[in-house]
Length: 300
Image (cartoon, rainbow, N blue to C red; front, side, top):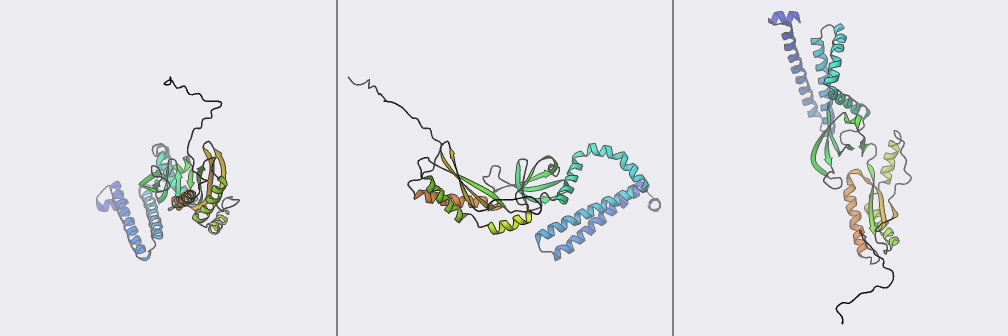
């Protein structure tokens, strides 16, 4: 490096800066050429996305290693250099380091992947990107009912994987249990209502038992998951304002609202044809005991 500095007529640090810029430009040029060649060969968007990420990470790693080699010339000085700055870096860049460690954890342990639907803290959505310092989700829910998209893109720091629970809707098992509570009056023929609801969910709910069982067997190799039964059913309970019939079924993660609508349409149509069944709502009942006397002050 000193010889290069003499030939260029500059100081050693200036020569290092020039070489560093050349290294960065060279690696970025190689990255661009590689991605251009790959993009011509790969048509699958998911494969292209992952390839672009891998090439970017490799280029970034090589740039860092090369710059360290340039500025910390004797490798024997590297340990001393790192020891001097580690304390300051740990304090000043604590959140940055946590995000980087979180990124490594996400890539290695796979609590979620791009395309998974997750929930963490106050946000739910589909993961659309994972980067060095944060991951990004396309938000669902919030002020929008059910699981429809809000249209917002939410960026979440990677360190959240160490500080908050993460619920993965789709990891290893593309189905979730969905329940629809239906309240009928005490005077209704609740057994008839139960039969109607059972028939409706049998038709509206998708037949996922075969697919779900296959996925469940694969997931059970990594997690201890066990379900007693996977067919739609109806549970009966008593509430303050009537008898509650809760329809429970397995549904694909991203079809919950559509199936919910099908079930309610079927139930409402069937109940409309049954005079012995009425939907309940919050009511107040007053029971009077003994004769009721009404004084007519207007009579003579």
